[in-house]
Image 1 (cartoon, helix red, strand yellow):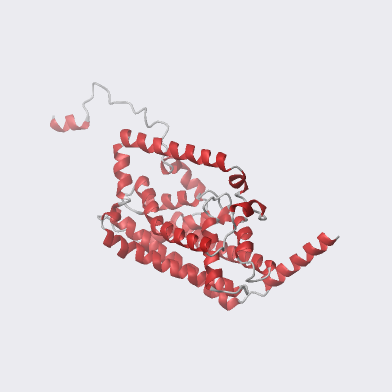
Image 2 (cartoon, helix red, strand yellow):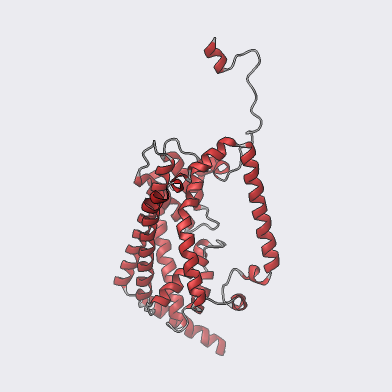
Length: 340
């Protein structure tokens, strides 16, 4: 009976905190979130423009592809939206290829990786994150298998890494054209000044906008918005998407935030903030993302469009790639006919 009463009290406190949202701060948080996306698109556009200098890479085509991927990733786990992003970009950028577009996404994450690593180390130093012994005991924690079986998890990661290395080695020896296209995506890294000016600057601005969005989300749900709490939310948001078992890291984010923000507000308020922030961001991403899909593809049935190119997008050769028949011996090939 006591447990039931405690659950009902906690539920009542949660919904009370959720209903008391400050709408002005919430609108500012959404505005900063959209600004962050706009800045990130500019950085990706510049990466693609460097890869295809002879082609005009238009901002709104890049925005449509990027946001379509963001929208699908908001509701589909395992980064399924990246397939949609690459598909639309491939059909909107003249002369583009999937290997180049995929490698451009790697370039787009380099600065983010550096910033996220620095923030993570700072958060660890400040004691804002739970230690390994505490992780399995956190509610709704979906990394439990990794934490409880670290050796097996390490073995699986090593096998996956070895498989990736073998695949890249095979491709380097057998698919010269594929390798050449892959390298194009890294073209902007050949000039570090250009990379800093056209990519890092925009992504740094997107991080500023992300900080602003997080700050106002905290304010909207009446959580003490300090430098420490803002940092904790930023780090947890990155951690929750490292293993994308659920869309947006749902579950993991709430569990760690209750620990990280302990003392900043009641647990019910922290949960209201976490669920509320994730719900609002998901709604915004889905609305903009599927609006972009509708404009770019003329339909919301993105799976129907992507299905035909999915093998190529994921780097798998078509089933008949190795069975192309040579021209009949009785007919000269095109080059011979030109000489005749």
